[in-house]
Length: 399
Image (tube, rainbow, N blue to C red; front, side, top):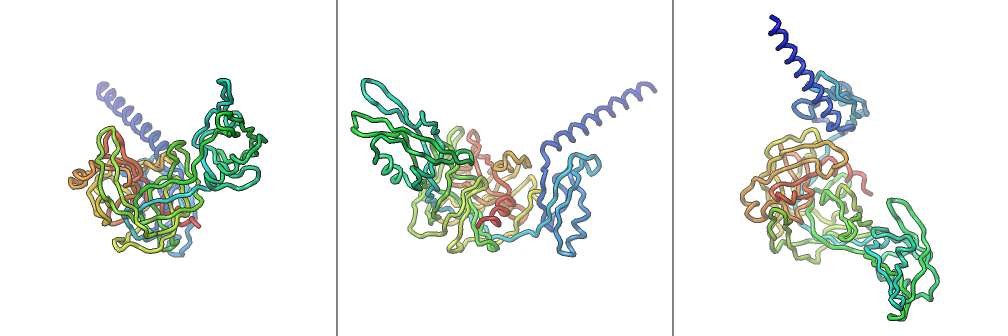
């Protein structure tokens, strides 16, 4: 009898440890905020769910309140409280077309500083000494607004040694510095010792067009400066038609890429460069676009799905993938979904996910659930994606 009791105590202890562990994991991995569409269930996955009786009551009155609900393990053990906001789900036109990006910055980005030879083997770095850093965004010089590298060059070259007043933006805050240029006998002029950039170009994939807001969404991640890795502040830009001419296959440790020819046809105007993607206004909707309902985060499930992408010419195609991991960690929203390419045709063409496929829509259960953001470099057959709901909600807030 004692032996049976002892075995029972051990089993009970193991169960308690397992429950406590799952509660701890859920507290870390489950979302603090949930946007729930009216078609959703209350399950986050097979073991975590939340109770929300107020939703059923509010649906009939068309009132959509925000409530505090408890996420529970197996519907019993409380894990954490979450804010639940109830909204109508939306329909979008899913694209998958590749496009060219022409982006011009709001201000100019400092991409590097350089020492100036002032003679007798002595060098100084005026920009660095002034406190200016790589990644800073110059807004004005001597109270004159600047938006291009040519404007900066013209102002800095027209100098007799007097200090410049440099207003810049760093980490979202404006700062002002005084920069004293250094005279270079070899060049016969004063130099600020600074390199700047005002534009960039690239390719990406259109995710969807939101008819309700008139905004298209793409990429699923921000465009960063190639040298500083800082977000490019958007002043203006264009989305232009593009044609995939060849593919550089992805391999373990080496990221592949789509190679495209830009066309003169403008598809839309860029409005915002954000951590959730590149957004803009559409001039026309592609003939290959299809209407889908946007899924909420909690509707996404592990298992089979479809990837819509253009890896040849101008026509998007559907390819088979498998969603293998789902995360609600808000600090890594560009990696909400981990998936694996299973489609033999796509693997033979690209080796998996390559540069230029960012923004490719992911369809599951006839709903838009996500968009590709990054490739896993050491295994190009796998990639990351952002929840479609995040991009959809962002597209509703773009002016």
